Each structure stands twice: as C-alpha cells, then as structure tokens.
Image (tube, rainbow, N blue to C red; front, side, top):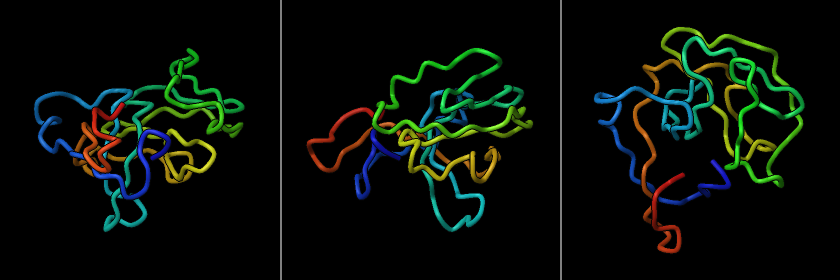
Length: 134
C-alpha cells in the first residue's frame, strides 16, 4: 500500500489485537487476498459491516457522509466511482491509499473477517521509515 508503505518495506504486524478489540474504520489491515489466499495484502479499512459505501468521482461516502481522507495525497487520488453497496456482516471494505494504482475492494469486493489476520502497526526497515504506520 502506498504512499504510507512502499514495496520491500518491513513492518510489524500485530496478530493479536483483533482478539481484544474490533477492526475499525481507518485501520491498516493485513489479510489473505480473496482471489488467491496464498498471497497477503495490506489495505486501509474504509467500511465495516452495515456501512453504506459509495465512491463518486473518487470521493468516498460512508453512510451518506463524505469521508475526509488526508492520508491520500492528491497525486495518488483517482476519479473512479463505485456504486453504493452495504458491507455484509463479518466483512470489511478496504482501499489502498495509492488509489490510482490499488487493487482493492473496488476490484475484489468486501473482505471477510476470517481473511484478516493482523494490523500493521510499526515500520522498521528501511531505517528512515522507522515509526508508526498511519
């Protein structure tokens, strides 16, 4: 997921946090890719079960309210639309921060909770990327 994370960057993934707290909108989650569970993906949670999500010309709406996405730099935004959908029970709608190049729920649909196995919390390599993943 870019621009927060780059290819070959190393991160700590908390695999226990979701045993103690629910997955929340804004979390950066690590999950098995729904179309090939042998691969892992990392994306940001945009919608939780029951949320109505739509994207109009790149602007994301959650339950009718425009989502403020300061983590998506203008250079990485796109103008793609996505029809309104209700996130099914036990599922999450996830998007990459590099919207113009992201393979995410707009392509493969909501991610079942059983595929999510951790939360990205801390980058440690390269050293200039040391710190909390936001």
